[in-house]
Image 1: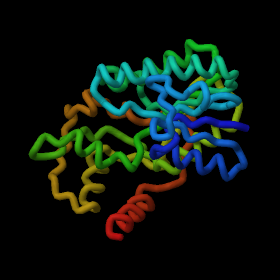
Image 2 (image 1 turned 60 degrees about the vertical axis):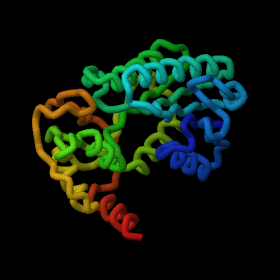
Image 3 (image 1 turned 180 degrees about the vertical axis):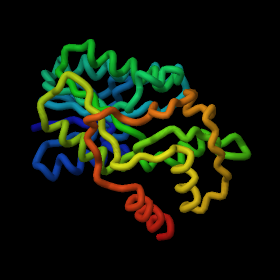
Image 4 (image 1 turned 135 degrees about the horizontal axis):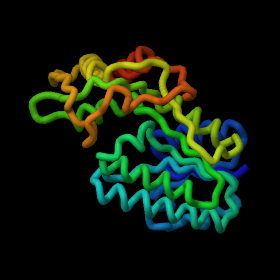
Length: 253
């Protein structure tokens, strides 16, 4: 069948496109780089013609509150309109575990708005809420750096590799819509502060890491379980140790 992947040239999208192609499907990697812009609507109608499934894996180019809200609202509305016209049978969107409990953050308010649009629409859907990606540990550290130290809560996290996310997204894309939310996560739990400190050390980053229970995470003060999934989450297979070993090798290559 024809599957359109919005954000199909990004970290998750490119891996998902490759997986679906190996299974014999006709896959369109849609992004501004390929002439398809969900935010403006450019190229959407042509890209979605004949599509049965649409995967929305695009992220806002800005984490600033108003910009993120504008992106997810406009892109979400444009996609649902184009899907209705094309007769799409399954809308799959990638979101974040705990979004509804992280509403002190403008970015997570924007993700909630995206989810609410999907639920209020007429296209059958599945929302995949994922925990943080291992690949974003450096960005998390950067966001928490105050010029002297990286300050982070030691709230629990259960991060997942981008490849395991793509595997889960491809699986959901080929299944029937749930008209609900599914959660995915990695196989291990860690304290966020301790995990970032370990990662930075292995990457040769000498910035000190301070565990501070009041340190905000993208504007949100976390409770112990803010970022971990509930029971029944689908778990990836790649451990932190395996991913870290691959990352250290890639850095030294």
